[in-house]
Image 1: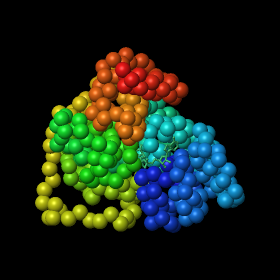
Image 2: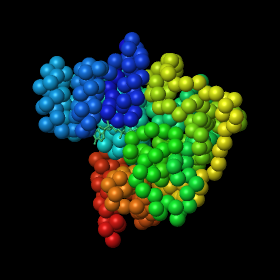
Image 3: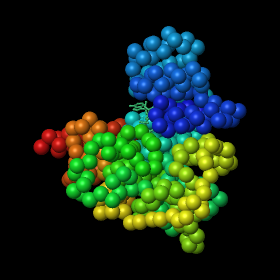
Image 4: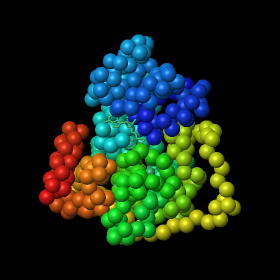
Length: 387
Ligand code: NAD
Ligand code: MG
C-alpha cells in the first residue's frame, strides 16, 4: 500500500489523482490532502478518502474543519503543508499546486527524504531546477514527472540508455490560437483563451498553453529533469495531442509515447512505474486516426519558445539562473492580470520580451534568493504595465 500526499488536491491534477487512487483502493491510500481556498471541495474529499491530515490556506477554514473533523490533524498557512507532510508518513508526495507557491513544498519534500516526489508543479523546476535536482540527488529522492510530455520522455527512457540521448522532442498542441496572426491575437478575450482544444486543465496552465509559454516552461523543465542542454530539446507542433513526446537516441532510434490525451496515464504511471496499472483510458483507434501530423511552431509560438532558449543559454554559459525566475514570475503576474481583465492577451508576451530584454542575469543559489527575485520580477511587471 503506497501512502500518498496530494498537495493541491482540489485542482485539475489533484482531483484526477484522487480518481486514480479511488481506482486502486488496495494499492494506494490518500493520507494527506491540501488546498488553498476551495474548502467545500476539500470537505467532500475528506468524507470520501479519510486522510490523516489536511492543510488549507486560511486559519479560519482550518478552525472550522477542526470542529467538523476532530480525528484529522488540520494545518494551515505557509507552514501548513510542511507540517502536514511531517505529521503523516507518506511514500509519495504528489505536488499539484499551481505556480511558484509549489516551490517551497517541493523543496521540503525533497529534503525530507525517504519518499518519492511526483511532480506536476512544473514551476518548481522552472524557477529552481538546479537547486531542486541537486537536493534530490543528495537526499536520494526520485522526482517523477507528471507533466504529460515529461512523463512520456520518462517512459521512453525506461530500459534505455539515458547517456545516449541525442534529442528530446516535446510535442505541443499549439493551443487554441495555433493559426492566429498577431492581428487576430490582439482581439482575443479571456473566454477564448480558456478553451483548450485537447486538455481540460486549471486556468493558469490553460492560458500558458494559449501563449505557448507552457511549452517554453516545459523546455526548462525537461532540461533539469534529464540533464540535457537546451540545444538538444526541440518543440514540434502536434495538434492532435496523441504523441506525448519523443526521445531520439545516439543510434538514431526514436522512442515515443502515444495515447489519448488523459492525465490519468502520467498520474497512474507516477504511482505504478515501472509497472503499469489498468486505467479507464480508452484505446487508441489507429485506423480511425489514419495519420499523425506535425508542423513547425508559428512565428508567434516561436517568440515564447525563444524566451526559454535565451534564458537557458545564459544559464548554461554563465551559471546565472535569474532569467528563468523572471520569466516564470512575470508570467504568473501577467496571467493573473489577464484573467482579471486588466490587460490584453498580447500584453503577456510583449511584456515578457521587454523584461527579458532588459534583464541582467545574476546567480541565485538559495530558495530565499529565488523568492526575492520572484517578488522583484512581479514588481517590475506591474511597473512596466503602469507606464
Ligand atoms: P489548478 O488551478 O486546477 O489547481 C491548483 C491547486 O493548487 C488547487 O488545489 C489549489 O487549491 C492549490 N493552490 C493554489 N494556490 C495555492 C497556494 N498559494 N498554496 C497552496 N496551494 C495552492 O491547477 P492544475 O491545472 O491542477 O495544475 C497544477 C500544476 O500541475 C501546475 O503547475 C500545472 O502547470 C501542472 N500541470 C497541470 C496539468 C493539467 O492537466 N491540469 C498538466 C500538466 C501539468
Ligand atoms: Mg505538459
